[in-house]
Image 1 (cartoon, rainbow, N blue to C red):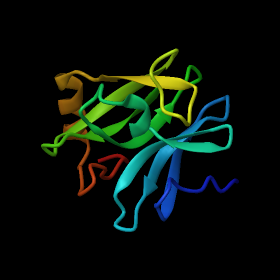
Image 2 (tube, helix red, strand yellow):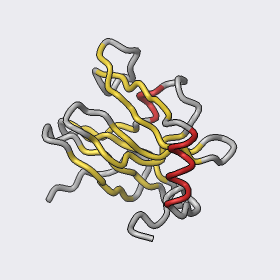
Image 3 (cartoon, rainbow, N blue to C red):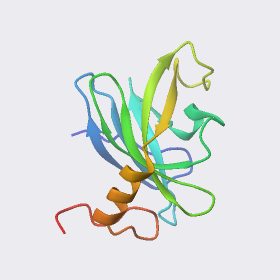
Length: 134
């Protein structure tokens, strides 16, 4: 077990998935428990929102899973309060933040997939609800 820390200004974090390369994703929480999705790799925690730039008009709340190719799935919140799922795929040579050498190219899932997810989950205050069997 290893303490990954938090994003700057936050008070807690939770990791949700790790891949074979040791990259970890999850959520970092501020004092009011508002989440920000993070990617932790090579000892550095990065806010996923800083990697997507203005491509996606969605605040990434959490990373839920990461595979061996580095693709990340998670939950995001639009400015109108709609919950969306996303698939973020690492790209090399993209416009990036200072803290990483790779950018993230997000792709929202279809409306049908989002509707199915919402039907199966009970979204709470922060867009994350009970994730187990209903």
